[in-house]
Length: 84
Image (cartoon, rainbow, N blue to C red; front, side, top):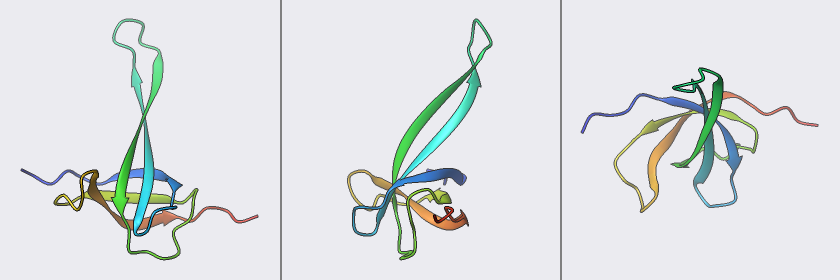
């Protein structure tokens, strides 16, 4: 099976050890009405990065299955979340 290209998404949760939940949003036109509709999907991604926080923009790439639901890995942090 070929590797899937990287996806860019927002970190939603980092409560698990070495796992981040990343939400990817895609805007696609409706087949009949052609209005842009937002679709989102959450991926569990393996993360060795310690300073990952909720709100960070990250790139994930597909890897071999690490666990039942983890088939993605955080490759890099594109943009850190603004701290208040």
